Image 1: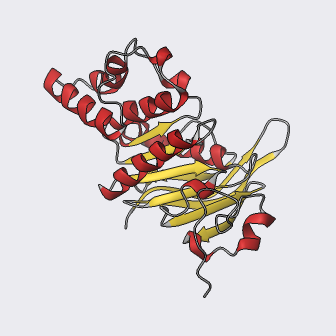
Image 2: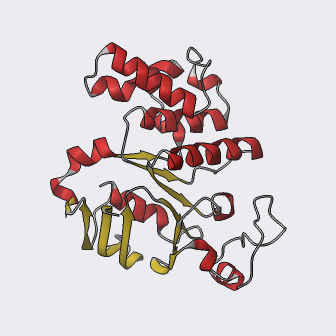
Length: 251
């Protein structure tokens, strides 16, 4: 599979001298469901922001489809969708349908194309029938799905979700997981950035774990042993203490 995004020796040092990322090599391949995990402060959101041009590396390079990211920003904006953890900052419309239509309208599509994209995005996101609702009347989970729908209406090749389970109840988490599963089946590239890895673990084909700004794991998730998760401050998805736990088959 070809790479959509690739980081080569990516380092980020904050103004106070703290190192946020330390020579990280990383890639996102077409059609994969990728889990980017790590405890709070591990550098995972920082890495995701670099991938979409929202941060500037101290050293290293980001490539988008083999070309330097700095030369590809307009195409990147149309090809890679990013859903922020703070979804309120991403919701711009006065109604649900107006918000989802915002992106494709700015791309200059005709009314029918916009309506078709909005309809499909709302259906995938489980928001059909709520078109005329005002966003501020939605629940936290519905707002998260609205932000996802707004990005999907742009028909990106790759969707990046930053901490999509934060502050959601059980049913809302299930809805976000369902959306990810649906999109993965269609062949869309999905990257989930989270410290709550147990919720998406079974769906991911590959897991990358950061700790202290360094990459400490990059393999199929089931290859990680239980002790690995505890060592790096993560919930072990093989235990019965979590509703999302899966059964571990020992090799």
